[in-house]
Length: 383
Length: 135
Ligand SMILES: [Zn+2]
Image 1 (tube, chains in turn yellow, cyan):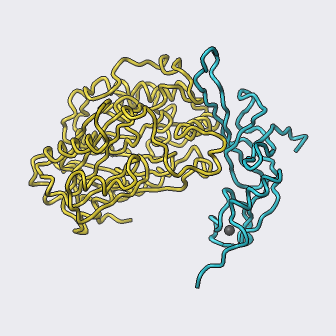
Image 2 (cartoon, protein in one colour; image 1 turned 45 degrees about the horizontal axis):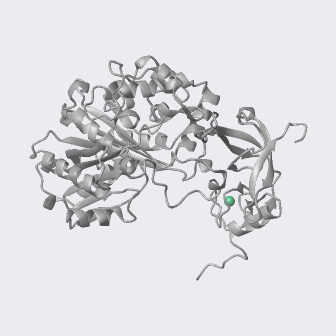
Image 3 (spheres, chains in turn red, yellow; image 1 turned 60 degrees about the vertical axis):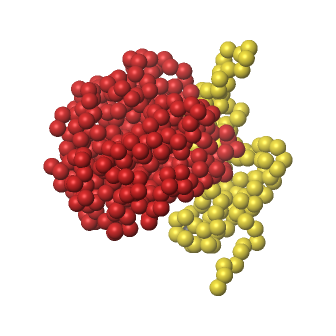
């Protein structure tokens, strides 16, 4: 297992813009603001950026549109689009490109204005041919079927799913940038409108505008920049299928492989992680990923999240920004896992700060449980 | 060398059978596994030797969900649309519906049998409950 990339690059700047609602602005506008924020934060300039890592659903050629808008002339571009997991996967490929000398300053960015545009997901141009005649509603149908299968096989309950949404909201209440900050109880989740059995409205992520940007550079240069570097320790990706009907087992995702690869590269184990950022498009995701990444045995995720274990004050902090369920979800959420992990490892997460956080795991999920990406970060103490 | 195209594309071949009211699947002559969706290459072993065979159409509901639509003006009850994943006895899994079955009567693990329905030119594979007595 390769450890050649461990500790070779670091996140040195993060920025967000247009979180929630940004009427009158397009995706490239708010993406540019997030990039500006991230570069200011890093102490680097736009003209220093020579590596670009981006994907989106609004542009056919997202990387090319981004370089034109920002006036970049990158030496290296990675526009791999694996859905919402793209940016967690980009952290791995950015580290690789930096280490290989293909670029010196890597910019990972995303922006979307779903809420202001149409208030719904942008459908992918390519849809599963043999599913579409049956009128599924994507991405929700896939996650509802995963939840139904998990419940039937392991006895997972809707109240256990609700624990995930309630924990996310409790974190969001401590995050001034979060979109939904009203109190939320398990009863509120269970009594919210059913949208796709067994998932009710509060089992589903927000649909917002929002942009995020992350600047990475090689570890030696990162140490000379103003912020405490957040080192890349390990990463992995895994993918088995596009359509949910081709997914081998709806209760086990490819995160089992992406996580194993990331932990192997980092030389760490689940119990070494201080804070987790798990792509929570739906409540079932967090349960699946806690199991698949090795935080609890398969089938026990429902019991594992119960009793506030992943909520503020619980022993395993998950989605400390409020996640896609309560913080922000502009269609492809993954970049925000990197940003929140960075804030936690720098110790700048305000009221929601996890004391002495030295390690963080980011997990990205793409399309309909189709692509999984895991990245592990740490402070200098974790190197 | 350029690859030789088969007589018909896999999507067209599948749909030709469905339009005739039959569910046919490809089976790999190298590894003997049936596959769906239709393809030119076996995803299990990489062979191009895929032959079409009639399927039994019997299967088991692997997962199910019910989409609640917003009620139309004047209605109070939301529209409900059930979707299933069916594990065919022949091997592969497919997404489908049980159009003549109440969503509440569709449960994971129930036995089902394929049927073809729909407009000419847009026939699709759907399912009905199949008691084991009928299977
Ligand atoms: Zn084969």
